[in-house]
Length: 94
Image (cartoon, rainbow, N blue to C red; front, top):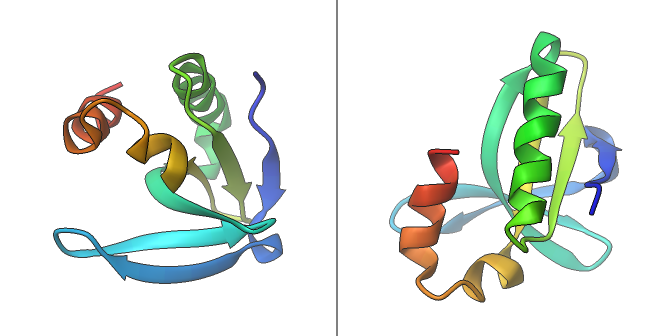
């Protein structure tokens, strides 16, 4: 699956609590957690990592601004992992 790339102003950001304050966003009625952020010049690395996350069965999207790309993971797909907290740490290491 190919993750969509959205303009950052097309999503609704919010913060939530999960072992600390986390960044999230809402897009098309779905909630996403911020997984990673890349400088605008690192577009290919951001897209490559997002594709690897999709290959692991996660629903992922990217947002872009003038300065950076962000990878977001759907909270439902993250929670559906066998051990969500362990899965999140493993995904950060990708």
